[in-house]
Image 1 (spheres, one colour):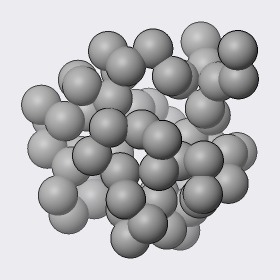
Image 2 (cartoon, rainbow, N blue to C red):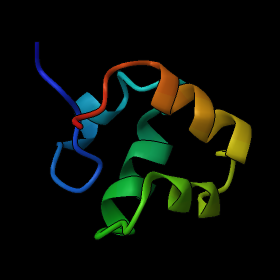
Image 3 (cartoon, helix red, strand yellow):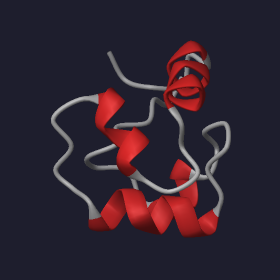
Length: 62
């Protein structure tokens, strides 16, 4: 199974994450490198609760 690395995966695959559409995927790319998944909450529209849902999705690389 392919996993998503928030620091390396292309924007079109980042949109597979919950609550991540094209605009947020672009913001993730532009904000790289991310020190932790929790840092994504700095992106408009990604709250700490949404970060938890992204982590729970099982799509991220370990």
